[in-house]
Length: 289
Image 1 (spheres, one colour):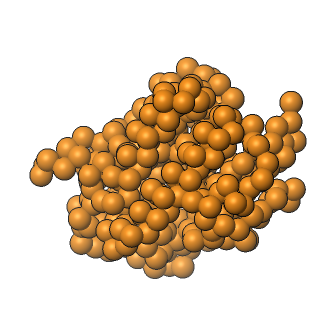
Image 2 (cartoon, one colour):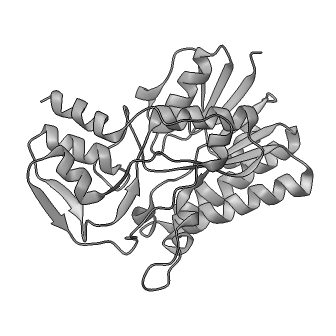
Image 3 (cartoon, rainbow, N blue to C red):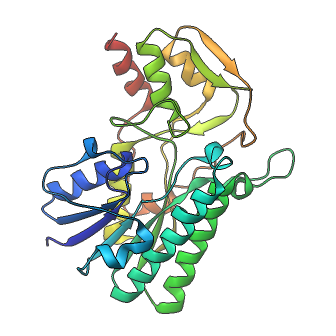
């Protein structure tokens, strides 16, 4: 049955793909976005767009949605060290506004957590959740969503993404993603820039696979730990070598971590399967030369 669905951050990379999938399924889709990293170029036909901050969600949205997909948060690890105040504003105050809106309407919430929450200690003992203001806030908000669900008997599901890539990614600057940065550098004939040591491993998941997992969590998920992770586990150097060409090593950041921790058992139990591969995506990019 068609539903009224609210997507925060729906003008961003993952959010715009989610809005497109929901609209194509015949739902009434409303997007709330402050356009901090989102873009009007990502608007999808048939979706109603509202510009505003999530902490003011009750002022901007005057309908009761059946489901809220909350993707509208700041989402970069290293860059967050430079602007912790933005993390507090967008990911703490903003998410609290969404949780209160959720509590007021009693609908279902699907929250996009950060997979860094499950990363074990580095050699210096630092846990993934303590790497930066972003990782700390995301872990804290995942805990708060769990608590709101328990305190107020509200339906919810928490999903976790793993290095999402695909059409519409952002490159370069502090908010860019590694795959799109590599792709743009490759297409321009520039050296691919890899953060030292380059052996740090990541799990890379196509945006279409990520969206199918989010939708399953919205339809059937209950509670925490819906990691949406492909089996594409590569070091950053291995990914750069897949593209080919010259590689330039950059200094590590304070947030450099060695390994990702896959956790897709619960979403797989709902019927999710990986359908896209990073190797295929890179080969397609190379054919564009």
